[in-house]
Image (tube, rainbow, N blue to C red; front, side, top):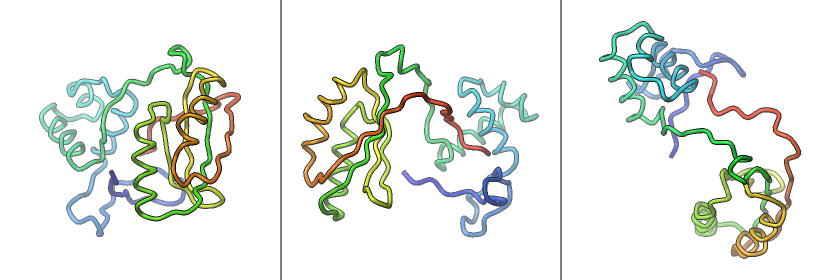
Length: 177
């Protein structure tokens, strides 16, 4: 699910409401950005509460939110849960190197990883490894079982390297808009 990229003012600066000529009519303005900011801060806000924050009436805000959803700027809404309280507080970054790669192998890997519930994030990366997985499990024993029984069985897996998280210093869910 690729969403269109938004224009940037400069490196590491917030997004602007400028029109990106490459996208034609699929642009967002300052009000849309304000709506996105409000929903990232609290996705449980009612349309009425969002409207109050962006100084518009509810009908245009409702229409804007629907448009942002339809165009893929808003991909979904989730509840952020505490992994530790759910017994899944052991975080691991697992770097995967494949023995060889092709479109079919990449597709098969993606399908396999999507079906592993402990893998919460997966990225195709460049450099010494092909993929980076973020895995949430209860403890080292469960991670070992996952590696030996599931991840280690992936076809064309050449190697993996595990990096264990000692402390989470920052975890942001939103995008600066």
